[in-house]
Length: 250
Image (cartoon, rainbow, N blue to C red; front, side, top):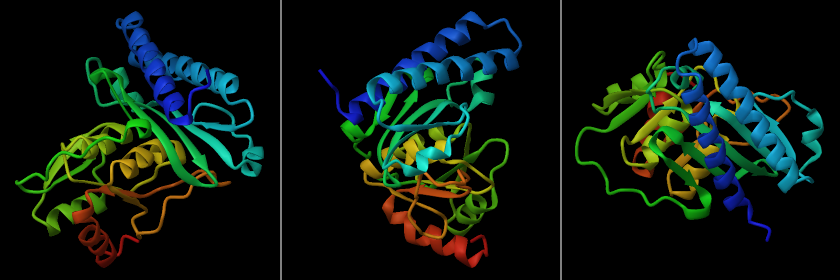
């Protein structure tokens, strides 16, 4: 029986996550770089082989693979990050790393799965997550633990928010989906594989997801750089975009 695209994304992200946990256990005593490199390689090989088998007529863009610009002629392109948050993956027992599997159809992020293997959770568009009730405390703005970025800092300051720090892009975006924070604003550089699956899941859950200038997220471009991102609860979208604009960050 052929499974649909949403199920396929969820199953593959989950399978890659299980494999990565195995790699982590096997190489627990190795240098972190060895662990990270092996995780990247093995998860990439699993995902590319599985997609070639299940969807041979589609194109694939993976962070760990050579980019074939023939994908630009395809309406359906799978965009995957076999290991999002390699730094965190290397730091046992951190859980803020992820696997991304997404399908862009004519540039739109319509299918996505984000596995959080360290938490034994996969969020995906086949069963759109239900947002928790609104948080009654100070709005929580999530940002990178190593480089928070001016957009997140400006928004937090403008709305008297609390800064929360976390690792991978997928983990941060899913923290908004899971109700652990309200706003994820990113500046400083990402690529399509960093945010296609998270954006798909966020949109399916009813969140706002856009570029920092408010324009839609469009995928399968010749230049895979997609450097800025806003994922947030809809009640914070307008004020966040306004703060970023007034701060001259777009």
